Length: 227
Image 1 (cartoon, rainbow, N blue to C red):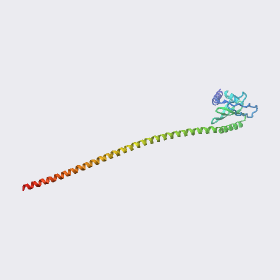
Image 2 (cartoon, rainbow, N blue to C red):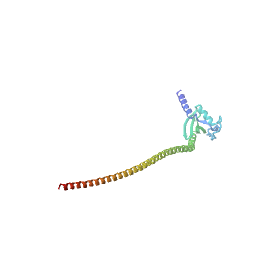
Image 3 (spheres, rainbow, N blue to C red):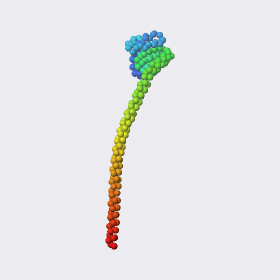
Image 4 (tube, rainbow, N blue to C red):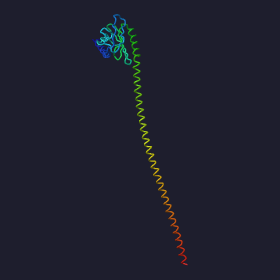
């Protein structure tokens, strides 16, 4: 009873993992012998496989959870799976793209199944090179766009700083001109004030000299009259 429960759980996990694999490629009928049967790739618009195709057979086994997944490898949008049907000791090797079956090989040879699986894995690596390169190029493009946006932001900031600097320089230049004009005006006023001061001082000295002369004259007259 416990063995049946474990098998049911294992089968459920397999169904959840690969039940999404839809069948979009037309398979060749499988021969009665144990020799491997390959399914050639067909255009995406091909009809569903015939009931006696290897792909249809594998799909039915997955739906009934009568097959166990042994290995699965993904490369980009491509993948390869090695599955095993214990009751008949039969291996199924599948090559798929975006969960759509492309090729399926059926064999009872353990060594042949491993060899085909490795071959399919190698094919997925080669087929995925374009997708991987596209993903990298998209990442580089996004990164470059981010750098461009950052540089544009930096450029705008520098341009704004330059505008502010130029405006400030103009303001400083105007203020300097105004200050020079005010200084020149004050200098002229100061010079005029100095000239006026010198004039007043000269007049004062003249008046003082005249006052001294008068004082001396009056003193001499007074002294003469006393004699």
